[in-house]
Every structure is written in structure tokens, then in C-alpha cells.
Image (tube, rainbow, N blue to C red; front, side, top):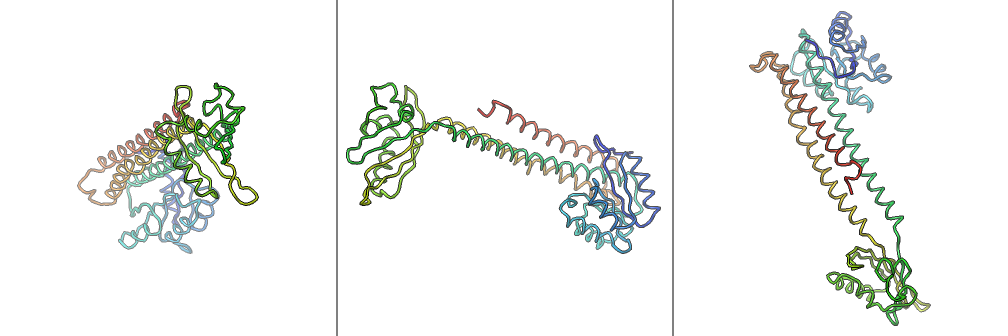
Length: 356
């Protein structure tokens, strides 16, 4: 029984100082559809991996000059090679050797003599696990990039948004508005408010009744400490509809250091707040997807690791080998289905027009 890896020929690197062992591994792996590269020494394998990283490494323990544990340790210390699965294939069957193999970064340990089907099953499962990790990483990077794009779009919208300005003389509480401030506050259709000062009370009358006292309180606190300005968002009733505006203000001082005028800006932020709500909704869905990645994906991963451990048990924990292999394939299929579902949800979430 062979286990060809998905739609491409995965590259398996075999490292063993015994030529006969390399030949046996090459025959088995080539028959299963894998591309095989062989090395009799660890130093050569490391240099080759740096040039062309393989998809998986089968590594002997007992080798001259540099043993398998040292080779694995060196590989794991290199960022570009650290995620390559290393399966130890050794005649050493003692517990100490197995523990050391895992401590140095190996993902599995096969004791010689071995059965071809067992080795192929372990190879396939670890290639599947590596692919799953990469797909999850790609999904996470994709989600982060989408969030950055939405944030950039929001910032650009704020830059091009129309902002009105106003000036208020503190001696008489009269305001002079720019044309855009008149439009934002809903004065444009009235009798020449944009060309003549208006009393502060008239400005306040445009503010939504539920927000008016809050704005008055902010204004009065600012007047008690003229060295500081203020920023506030509130609702405005305009043309029989309600909008949200953002107001910033500060005070100007005369030559004696006394405040004589307040100056500020007002901006219609209704659309921005709508976008923020949409982004918050998207972020909730992103967190749900992230939760799925960290929790739902864990179950088949744990099951797959457990099945690999069962394969290492000579008694197979009371299970038939074919049953174990079927369970491995079923779990791998479940993992792939979960990843596809995450991908589908992400694509649907960010389809054009759905974030409006």
C-alpha cells in the first residue's frame, strides 16, 4: 500500500551512513511516489537542506562524525529549516534514545527493522500535519492583511472627509462658521448663517436633546481650564435625520495670556462610525475563526498524534493496523475539511460589498 502525497511529489531526504539502508529507503519511497535525496553523512545533508529544503527528513541516529541527534539539533536551530519534520529511523530501541530524539526536535521515531507500510503511514501523517500548520499560518497572515487593509481604508476615508471650522468669541458667545461647518450642522438652508455670526445657543440647539447636556458639561469644564482644549462626539439633528459629528476645540490667548477666543473643527463621522461598527462585526467573526483554528483544529491533530503513538506500540493497543491507517486517513480528511471551512468563511466574510 502506498501513500502518495497530495498533488505533488514531496521531497524526502534520507540520511544514513549505511549504503544498503539508503537503497532500501529509496526503493520504498520512490515506489510510493516521493522524490528522494540521499546522504551518507549529516554534514552533507545539512548543507544540502540549506540549499534546497526537503519536505521531510528520515534520519539515522548512529553515524560517524556527526550523529543524528546533532544533525537534528543543527537543523532546528536554523529558522529556514526548523519546521521540516524529522523522523528518526534507528536500530536503537531504548527509551532513552527515543526521549533524546524528541528532545532534539524529532517528530517521530521508527525502530529498525521496520515495515514499509508503517514508515509510509508515518511519513504521510507528518506531511499532512506540516501542510495543516502552513495552511493555518497562511490563513492567519491573510486575516491580518485584510484587517490592515480595512484599517488603511478607514484612515484614508478620514483624510479626505470634509471638515468644517468655527470660531467663537468668548466675550459675547458668538460663532462664525465656515461653509462646510454650516452644511455639517444643518444651517445651509437657513437665512445666511454662513455669512454672519450666530449665537452659541443656536449651535447647541442643533445637538440631539439626549447629547446636549453632555456637550454643555464638556464646554463648561473646558472654560474652567483654558489651557486645555477638548474633543467630543455627539449627535446632530439635520434635515429630519440624525448624524454623528466629531468636534475638536482649543483656546487662543491674548498678549496678556487671557483667553479671548475658542477655535475648533467639526466633522461628520457618521460614515466612519458605520464603518467602525462593520469592522467590529468583522473582528468578532475573525475572532470566531481564530477560536476555531485554536480549538476545533486541535481535536483531529491530537487524535492524529495519538494514532502515530499507537503505531509505535508493537501490540497496536489492541487495534488492527488497517484500522489504525483508516483512522489516520479519516482524521487527516477531517482536518482538511476544517481548514477548507475556515477558508470558505474567510472568503465569504471579505467578499466585496459584504463589509458595507
